Length: 242
Image (cartoon, rainbow, N blue to C red; front, side, top):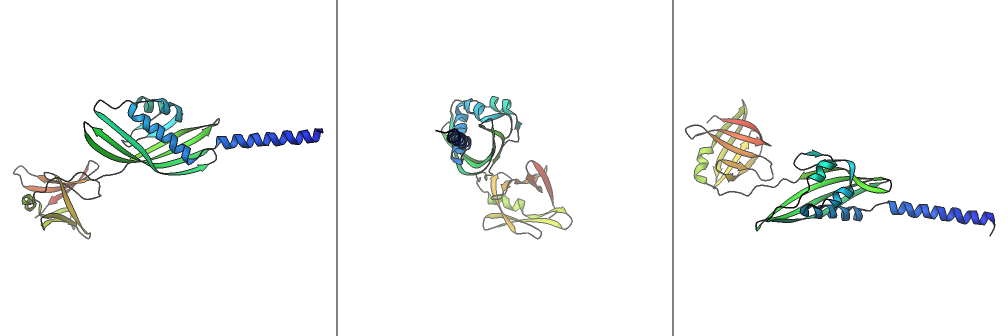
């Protein structure tokens, strides 16, 4: 074999090895999902191994409780479920964008938890940003959100609906009317459509698929004197005028 031929073979083999190396360094959505499922499976048992392995040292974690954590705090937060509690989490509806050394995986988490024989469910949405460094893919940022779910309705007490009925004022010209109709409690703000108020507990109501509560406040004599529109623990007071 001539030197030229040998050089061509060597160059060809080198390019082939580089190509193979690059291919091995890429990542797929399927692999990202597999790793993510490995992480969530370890959460219930408190196994910190996947968290140490797949999260970068400089990662940023923002969870559904509003906490901001670095890797140490996040790993330290992992612990086994208490006695009497078990559960599982499934990664579903994944979507990804993989661009060079960056991969973004966005997905839902369906959680089932059994607490002393009672089954609970919750849904979350999570987005992870993976970065390839030195041939290794790790998460550098994670954001978790919890889907809002309506509370379980309480038992209605139509006999109290007359206490709630009336007009409530926020500012002059901005009013909210409350009335009962067919055994149901409804409200309507000026210029808007009417809402069905669903009971949660005594004097506490909610609207379907709307986060927050509507509470009827009573004075020292037990009469309803205001409607409290509670949003994320912040109150808007509507004063009863008639």
